[in-house]
Image (cartoon, rainbow, N blue to C red):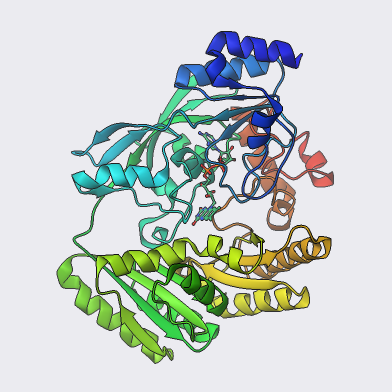
Length: 465
Ligand SMILES: Cc1cc2nc3c(=O)[nH]c(=O)nc-3n(C[C@H](O)[C@H](O)[C@H](O)COP(=O)(O)OP(=O)(O)OC[C@H]3O[C@@H](n4cnc5c(N)ncnc54)[C@H](O)[C@@H]3O)c2cc1C
């Protein structure tokens, strides 16, 4: 059966586009969260037609189809949990059209996020959603997860930047959506659907004008509470900086060791604040934010003096997760959102959950959005530590729900959090989502075992897989 699947794929798409050796398949069996089964085959198509053909052949063989970008997902979204045919977009990575007059770009899904801004820079444009993984994650993956990033505080998440989509559906047919179309906004429905409603084969995305002026400031605090209150103070005063990120002492120390970016290692918490706009607005904005952080007990205030210093501070922030390798060989990132005003309580809950389970935790997160990312550091060769990390992650999830927050801020539900969906949604809520899925993917062949919970509540919804 598998041999004839391989043969059909090869004869339709060519040898180069089809991977079948166990070594090749193993590369596509995991993401940045977990691993699954070896897929039956991996297809690396060069265009939409090839994606459509691959889906049709997979369907003939009753094989599920899993779309894959760069595999940086943190919830098992691209992992073939029950096997199937993985479609990798590694060859569909081009910027197809740069429409400067209308400030938009048509891209293939495998285009790496940062490459779009780099290619648009000479036209004075950039792509705003900037996940910390932007050097490797793809725009297709970003669309499927509705990725956020430090600058999404003022610019909005990926859904606010997608204008139109080309989709291959579960039957292998191609359809398009456009936010300007009358009727239902199918573009928004597809963004964040984690490859369960359709496969993105190209997209028009919005580009913004490169701002005239950008300022980056660092404010150091004696404790995490005062830093959190300063965040609420800034937003409460009606100021929405382009980015407002927080790092605690554990992260500041490890980032400074790795990047020598100029972070104050004696602080218990640091806010990295960026604002962008017109030059003549900057001084007023700096004074207003500085006054607020000082009123909340900031120990120091520092303004990046040069673009190089600004970039170094951002490199530290965006490289924070990797830098934790200096503390432990593995880390698990929890991703929850809480109402901004409850940040101090949520951070205390994180600290006590980690202490109870004897796990080192570092916090680096999108504070302006109330989107926490506790990094739980551990050694996966030690079963006790693995159990302790899972228990800590679960306690943090519970605390976020109790505070009125959500189970995912931006990383998605995927395989990891599908059971947790029952903690925040009723059976009726989930049934509505399942009906939407039925419209797009009645056979549940696109990315099965994701988003929807398994088990008893699932049975009430019908065979959701
Ligand atoms: C160090 C680090 C930092 C990160 N920081 C952030 C952050 O700041 N913000 C954030 O939101 N996330 C962040 N992430 C998580 C991750 O990078 C994002 O979820 C990203 O959008 C995944 O993109 P990818 O190309 O790697 O997709 P993959 O991991 O390959 O896939 C993710 C999901 O998208 C689906 N998919 C992929 N391509 C397509 C397609 N063409 N059509 C349909 N479905 C598709 C997959 O099936 C899967 O469900 C971070 C991850 C790491 C490791």
